[in-house]
Image (tube, rainbow, N blue to C red):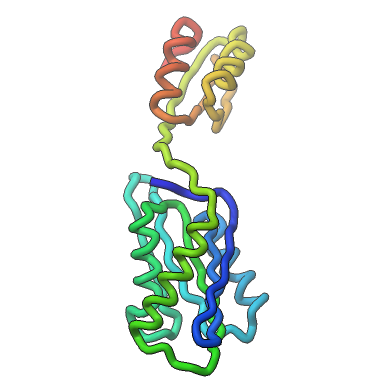
Length: 189
């Protein structure tokens, strides 16, 4: 599976209709849609499709035809994202009508092509599932533990200072296993 970490855009023209596709990280999806609606007040449609992982690692999908004939825009756009195994991302296609009706087949092709164009332009990053662990250790080991976190590419999500230092850490399974091996005598899980 793949994801993106910034917004990409590309434009397709079909019979004077303009399809401007924006591929965006899911966290910025709603904000980007609101901005685009302000920036393109004369656009006829804002077709959307998105895929993201919920807290149970299930893929949640959504799409909207935004006034285009049912099934001709949102669903084909979503199918392109599915085919490319894109997650935690969304696509917004801004359409300016050019005066010529494209028909259902033409719309499906145009929206699919617009999403493919923006995907081809994007730097896709490989998704690796991250695991969250809670660790505790004595205050005297804070420097060593934080150094090992940096060395093993571990994100420190939260720090609580009680009787011992308690950290919530997050990374891939491989990185966490490597960290736990190296920090074995310093921490308790």
